[in-house]
Length: 574
Ligand SMILES: Cc1cc2nc3c(=O)[nH]c(=O)nc-3n(C[C@H](O)[C@H](O)[C@H](O)COP(=O)(O)OP(=O)(O)OC[C@H]3O[C@@H](n4cnc5c(N)ncnc54)[C@H](O)[C@@H]3O)c2cc1C
Image (spheres, rainbow, N blue to C red):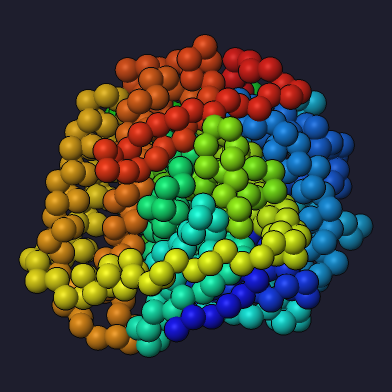
């Protein structure tokens, strides 16, 4: 079955919907999403969207830009960061005009709260920059953008899982997807494809990420010769619910919550004397691991406390209602009276599909674009987050660069003709599905995934070294062999989730390999990538972006310079 659209968008989170809105009315556009759109992970974002509105104290986009670059440990492309921070302001006002119910100041302006690493006057003290709707900011953004899409008659293919990218003559020609309800394979012939398929946190055991975040977008393009940029940088958020990983937003600390060890000590005083609990996430997660390693975890175990007891019922009920409820539901604890057990949780991929400032996917260190192929949001790497993302900057990124890629694609589809479909366009995707469905192997995908998640947590998370990464690399080879022997017991066609979980696992295995090999090669510590055997940042050799390609010989690397405009790399202290 072949469908034709000027533009196809893969993913219906904030990035995909914002891109779709730019194309609606100008081109024939379809959004494909493996989830019903409003179940996309954007809807779980809690804390806020950063923009220098200056509603609650002086603020400027230049300060936001500086914080973003320093927060990213100077691996940020500064031209991209400038766009992010400038366009954040108009983006938030667009959302307001579309009816997003932001929390308000007493005089009716959009309310703003402090967040980790966001400061005034280039690092002097915390600033109120995060715009929020209680702790349901992402939910409101997703609903608002979805309503706009419906109003503008965007065509949705809900519960279509994209399996393959079509490339002919070096140009993007479309995608192949499986319809979950019927099991049918569909080919979408398109002039432009925008990947907005979100992250890949499910390669780790303890993660804030939804079950669906299996890096499909990254893995699909990687298989088609596109590199993945800076995958070795994976963010661990300091406050996940112990063992479950469910996120308790940094907004809690923005509102005054404190991290404590077994002695009740506010240990961040020792690690970040000026920003304390609002230090960036890489630094805070490392501090927490250190506390635990040195025996100061609660009861000697591998967790710490998030203390919200002094915030008062009003702040918790009005500003943090959802996370208060999560704590009650999942831990049976009342955060008004008891501290909450937390541990760092795998949260965000700084790396992804490399793009230029208009979301065009680039193929090499010379920024050569693949005509017609775009990426935006967490799946992409533009790179505004460098080696460590600041809280609230992803919601900005998905909207600002979702919009830019949609706008560019709208022009592109007007000006260009169709790339021909390759012969047998669904050959690879149908083959993958049939191979899995008919396999007579003995392995269960879920067992392989369990090992992957546990081992990645142990060997390739907050702390790494050559020994742990080499061991992980070997483990991945073993898991790949086991995967070749995987069996899918459900032979059905309708909503065959077992089959799709196997597809997703294969994607996770590919991306874990890119992450681990990239981390092994990068012999320095920067942002979220901390090598115990190379504990310092090495700008002389490593102030550059990784481009990882995956082929017959495994993963190979090229490197791309970092764009520096206004801020020279400095020592990073908070
Ligand atoms: C719990 C939590 C809280 C967060 N809080 C904040 C916050 O307060 N502020 C902030 O800035 N950031 C926050 N983040 C990060 C931020 O929410 C995400 O990075 C961002 O929303 C990602 O948006 P996206 O549009 O790129 O992808 P997503 O919203 O993840 O959407 C991905 C889309 O791709 C589709 N998809 C995936 N694979 C396929 C496939 N194979 N075929 C078809 N469709 C596919 C999915 O169906 C989905 O529609 C938070 C993240 C989490 C997990």
